[in-house]
Image 1 (spheres, rainbow, N blue to C red):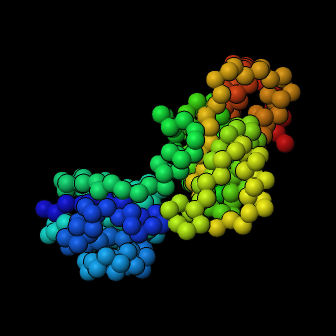
Image 2 (cartoon, rainbow, N blue to C red):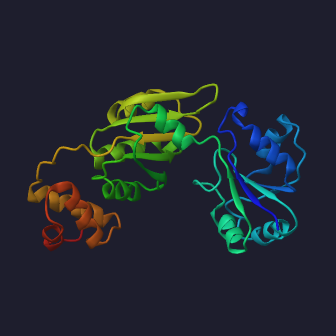
Image 3 (cartoon, one colour):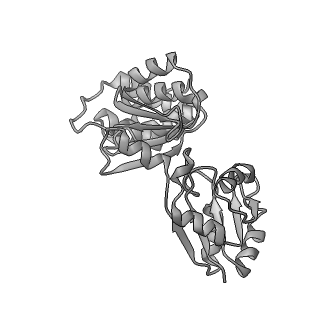
Length: 274
């Protein structure tokens, strides 16, 4: 019975592949890769000739049986295009299926954009909340930020270049103008880590061409107690969240956490549909 190795690969700089990862990639019978062409570049760089098969978001379920069959006769390595498989990359379903069938599942740790951005952000690292990739729609992003507005832990998320400015604006609207760090192209030639407030980040990246992978780190909620909102503001915010698709119960809870009002008080307010 074969072992499934979950291998972290470089997020940019090929020198970040560990000695252990190189050895395992050369010893397994098959590599399940998010993009075989991308992985081929890494394998050529290190002279590794192990066969590969594609395993990505749109074929991960249809490929499951074939990869599990390969595990019956030998070891398999799971890799994504960059970083650790399973963290906002394909891998979860295969890992679950391998565990269910009794295969050992072994991590081979290494590069991670999440932890790399966090530790250089200058923001607290003792506890953090990972939000994954932000939703594509502004209303859904605002809903997410509203839900974590009272969270004291540092927030970490991934975002695409063409949505970064809108997402920073949504964060500022729901969280306030908090300190943040925006890391892009980590470990690559044009690596940049911007540190400042959300407003300063918006100004900076409005004037700076955006390319590459981006990780955003945002400070958690301040410790001081918030000033209680007046009723007009509570009503307006509740209506905005509900118009964005949030159900009344969830919206009332989110507003209560930020406004100083009780959840039942917010829920009881009469809100006319827009």
